[in-house]
Length: 75
Image (cartoon, rainbow, N blue to C red; front, side, top):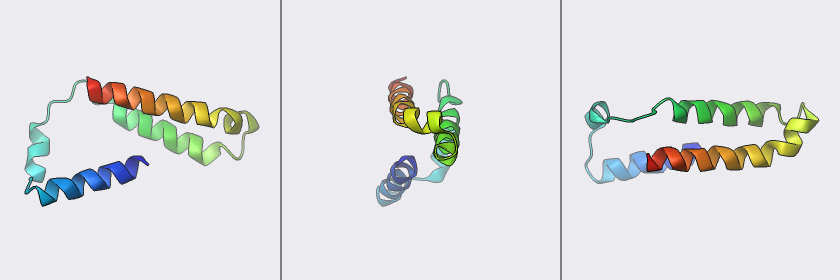
C-alpha cells in the first residue's frame, strides 16, 4: 500500500512537470518517522506467519502504522 502511494505520487509529480531536484528543498520535521514505519511494516509482514502472536496482532500494528503515518503527514 505504501509503495503504491509513493509510485502514484511520483507519476503525478512528473505529469505536473515537477522536478526531482525539489526534493532537496523539502524541509521535513521528524523525517525519520516514515522510514521507521516502513521498516515496521516490512518486519511485521515478513514474520507474521512465523510467530502466532504477531500474526494475531498484525492488523492492529498496521492500523497504528497508518495512523502514525497520517500524523506525520499532518506535521
